[in-house]
Amino acid sequence: MLQMLFSRCSYRWASTFRADAFIPLFLILVFLGACSKQTPPARLPLELPVVNVIQRDQAIKIEMVGQTLGSSDIPIRARVDGFLESIAFHEGGNVKKGDLLYSIDDVPFQAGVIEAQGYLAEALTTLANAKSNLDRIRPLAEINAMSQMELDSAEAMHKAAMGAVQAANAQLDQAKIQLGYCRIYSPIDGLIGISRVEVGEYVGGPGSEALNFVSQVDPIRVRFSIDEQSYLRIARHAIAMRANGKREGSHNRKDLELALILSDGSVFDGSGHIVTTNAAIDPKTGTFTLEADFPNPDGLVIAGQYARIRANTAVRKDALLVPQRSLVEQQGLFSLFVVDAGGKVERRNVSVGAKINRLQIITEGLQPGERVVLEGVQKLKNGMTIQPTVTDFEERAAAPSRKTANGNSSNSKAPKA
Image (cartoon, rainbow, N blue to C red; front, side):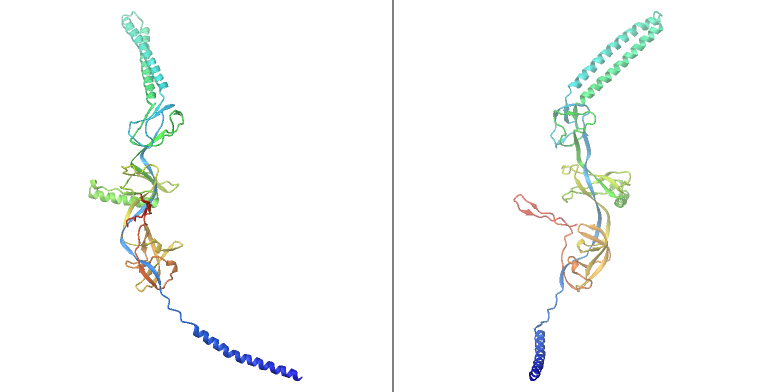
């Protein structure tokens, strides 16, 4: 019994001791932890590049994809069949109108000429006999020594002989023409391609393909298609330009000038003009086909190349432009971040116009003289304060580097618009 009382007293004393000791220890730890915390440094504003809104008179351009053609592309075909005897040109070179291109074995056609000459000689002999017989019968019939029937028969034989001579002459001409077709000449000045046949092959005949093509590349022609809206823009612009030209005088009449952009991005020297158009918009595709000619004296552009056609359709006065990468697009709606003098950003919805190189025309939502964030727009929220850094922006992409003769690379920047 005494042992039990002693144990209970010992337990209560130990519990009281531990609780009383723990409370001051906890307070000391909390105090030390609070003292160890330091106030964090003030956070610096985000530094982002900004650009000034560009304001200028801007030409509105449209670009269309097209394919180059020769202003004349003439297939070279064999008009008679036979074995190819010779090729008289350098493949891929220039030829002149009337230059000999191909020769076909003409022995069978020479025989045809000789045969036609024989028919002609026979017809001429028959005609001579018929004329002699008519000349003998006519005076006798006048004195009734020969009957009228015999005279009519002699005249008919003479006319038939004359017709036979005409037919023989036509047959001889046809044989000579067929013989002439054994020599194939260039119909135009131009560039001739790789021959599709070799010497010794049998060419011509029904359904035969072209032996080659001669393409006139100066001027070079480009065929391209545009949608209905682009057609209306081009047509209105061309009509306005021609009307202005007529007011200035017929000798100053103007046409829509086109620029040719090659596949490497370079702009071809010299402007082009539309030379022909389709009669109507294709209802299946909704496109309108046009063809334009460009001067090509050096023969740089050849048929079959893909290129782009650029045309100025209007000039927008005092247009506002910003870099395309400043814009944020969501479900077809555009916005950007405008920065005020204190660095505070404002997200603003805008309406966009045409693209000009790497710039975008802003039609609504922006004022002249404002600044917009160029990069890092995904980090921004409306009302944030940033540290703006005004930077320059290249309107055109830099030209790709190319290797020089000594193996070093060089970069050339395209001029600004």
